[in-house]
Structures are given as C-alpha cells and as structure tokens.
Image 1 (tube, helix red, strand yellow):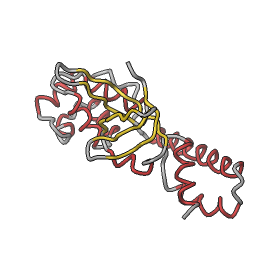
Image 2: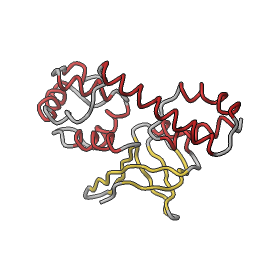
Image 3: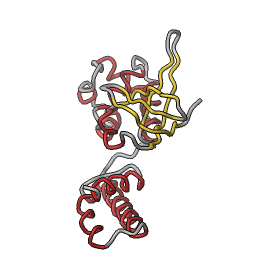
Length: 198
C-alpha cells in the first residue's frame, strides 16, 4: 500500500520513530532507531511496510529499499513474524545472515534474537535461492563499495563548493566525511552542514 513516507523526523524512541508527514504523526517501528539520531527535526524518507493483523496495523520502516526487501523476505519464513524479522535486521549483519543461509550455517543463525535451532533450519530451507539479489560484501564487493563511497564523497564536496563554501571549509570537513558512510548524498550533505556550523 505504501512504498515510503517522507516528512520531518520528530522523535526517536527505543523501538520506533515518529515521522510528521503533512501534519500526521506516523509511528514507524525500525530495527535500530539510533541510526536515525542525526536526522531528528530534519526531512527524511522512510521506506515502509504496513503489516495488518486482526487487532493492529503497524508500520515498519527502513533506510533503503534493499533493507525493506530483506525484511519482506525474512517475514515470509515460517516461524518468523515482523517483530522477529526486525530484530534480526537490528543486529546489522546482513552479509553474515546471507552468507550463513548460503552455507547452511544454522549455528550462526541462532545468534539472532528469537532464532532457535528449528527456526534456523527453517530459515535455511525457506530462504534458499531467495537471497541471491542481496549482495554479500566479498573482496570484489568491498572494492565496489569503496568506489561508490569515493564517488559519493566527490559529489558531496562538489555540492558544498556549488553552495559557496570555501576550499578551506571543504578541506576541513572532507576527512570527517571520509570516515562516514551514507545511504544517500543528501545524508552526507546534512552531516557536512552540521560539521561546518560547529
């Protein structure tokens, strides 16, 4: 029903965030609310999945489409509901999860919250061949990620220059940007602005 909701990030709670979109406050459950803490009072886009039950309608939110798709895939596993799928994503080891399924490593899967031996084996059965679209960061993947990070950094620095920041200011913030990883160039710019006003 919904693909994403865009609005102002109002508040963060231990299990959810509140997004103000056109005057409506959406409570959106997220894997790790503290990944969003730099964006409080800023405009953000949250990719969402609406899960309807007999007694509730809950929104689950994600930073990008890939994480949303991984949630949807996990949620289809027998014995794993949306809360368990979100708890698995909260560990933030997506590559480890995917690799464990590919290699039938049930012991590794059992480290995730709410996953016992039976559920781990079920995950391997249900997810076999369904995670191929989710890249595991092999050495080649790491090189691609590094290339993407450099390209994104260049875009951020060019944008800062276009906005009138001096080369001195840009050189001051560049090393800080290099240490971070951003889902989008806009996130990187928001981070840079915060550093420049300090």
